[in-house]
Image (cartoon, rainbow, N blue to C red; front, top):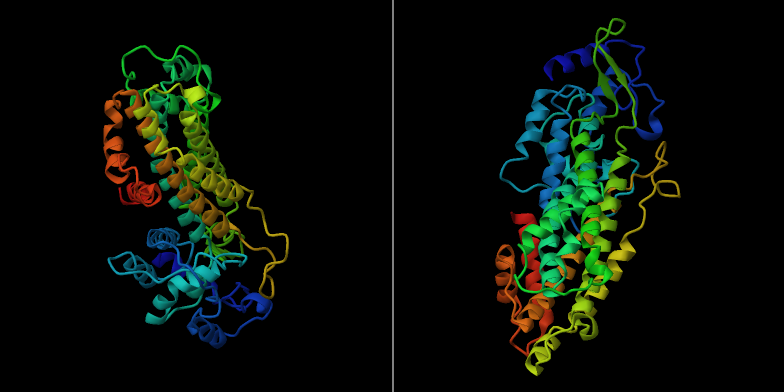
Amino acid sequence: MSEARSRFERLLDDPDILIYGVTSGPGRNAHVRLSPSERKAQAARLPTAPAVSWGEPLPGRVTRAIVFARLANFVEGHAAVTPALANGVAAMLGDGPLPAVPARGQGGAGEILSLSHLFLPLARSMQLKEKESNALINGSPAATGLVADGALAAARRLELCAEVFALAAEAFDTPLGHFDEGLDDYWNNPHDAWALDRLRCLMDGGHGGARRPYQAPVSFRIVPRILGQARLAATVACEVAEDSLPAISDNPALLPPDSDNPNGRAVSTGGFHNAQVPTALDMVTAAYANLCVLAERCGAKIMDGAVSDPPSQAAAKEALASVGYLPMAITGYEEEARALASATLLPGSESGGFGQNDVASPVFLAWSKQERAGLLLEQSLAALAPVALAALDCADRPVPSPLQTLADTVRRHVQLDRQAAALGPMTADLANWLRDRIYDA
């Protein structure tokens, strides 16, 4: 970083060089060339103007990810910042709270609105040099942090999905052939193979007795394929995050020296716009919506006596009736998730603002849709799990050993024997436990 900073300062000695936001003004003043004294005065000004958004803040885990991504973009020298500034950003990753960053109202061409909120206190605490204000608020660290958050949550959320759908499949007495090992290669898809393997492991051979001799409804048979598609989406998000973290996204960016440019070159770029992130997050959102639909269908089929063939005892039917309305609740969550599963495209109207700002970055919108859809999926799983457990109790069949911890947790939160108790608040407690398992693990 020190060497790159020195090269950058030597570039500034050239009176003919024009570097956006350094030897020129920002935004609409990009054409205005600054004198050395004007450069220093501009560097001393704090990036307060872009911090214009407000509202519900991003979770703390996300803002930490953004700070980490910003630091990663400094260490190779392409941002041309001083080690002092990098140390200041690194110190933000200590134990103290981070500044709040609004999750909405982020309609800028890049991420200056969000990053201004995040880094303004640091900028106030030190004397910034030329380009360092730009280095704090330009680039796409927010996109990197957002997609990394979505990818990490998706991996844990899909494991919960596998457990709840395995419990539902066992409750329905689904033929084990639907998840046969021979299908692993037959479908020619590693993500489907993962889903088949997880379901087999979680069901652990089932209850050991005679099983339903005919096929289960479509909703149960396609569980491995829908789970597999969700894992593909999570994998794409992970790959985009892994590509984005070391990527150089600064504007302007300092390129390394070559034979014609011994001090390197400072070039304006579009690196602040990470176009891969919205598409990757949209895939995750769509996968969550599909899993919500599947949860509702599986729950409804378990409750459909003509299809599920529950025990004929009146007590068993009464026990099932206690959870019979939960699939209706899933329908509400499912429909909201489906409404979120639309493509996040470039905004059709010109980005608000001034000067060169004409296309907004949609990364925050894509993350918000994914985050909300994930919450709706957790609520859908929390509603399906008690239905499945009640059906197993009615049939007097054991819970597979790998699913016993899940079953015990469901019973602890949703007391199925309390006929007069409202299931909604109890199921909400279970949904909160699922969310804690995803984010606190």
